[in-house]
Length: 174
Ligand code: SF4
Ligand code: SF4
Image 1 (cartoon, protein in one colour):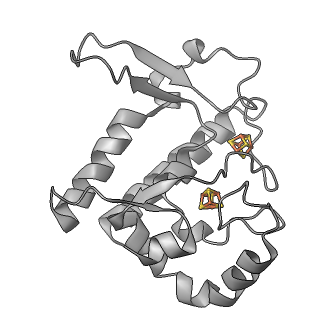
Image 2: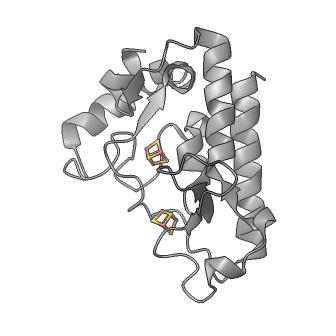
Image 3: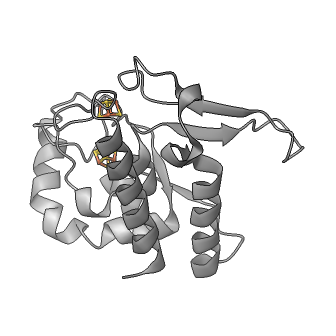
């Protein structure tokens, strides 16, 4: 397993852990997909991984593009039943989505004193305030992004910061 696959697997495992711990607060389920919006982009590293699955999904994706069941309002990889056609290689952003996240104020230059914000899908944690959650039950998005960026740099160098749209054509460009 490559390092990026290991990171993705760890993010998925953490998501499952949080999901199991807060069954009443987590509404994520098959068919719920308002988070699968168009406009998501990924690094070359994650795009290359998605490319590995595209040949075997070709017919399905061509059909999906033709039918356009979500009228362009959802990710191009979401099928008409609301399932992800690239589930096994979906990027980190899709694996953490739905779980509570914490991130540093991006405007702050002071790492230590920067304000920390918490956020979650509006369908989840409707009865439990995020501020009450222990740090262990929250994705630290800054840490996840740093790890992603390190792996991307290791593979393609510091200068490669290009992002690729999460679409068949966008991923093919990576
Ligand atoms: S890649 Fe899959 S999980 Fe991610 S936004 Fe697209 S359909 Fe949703
Ligand atoms: S993140 Fe929100 S919209 Fe997406 S599956 Fe979970 S509950 Fe549904």
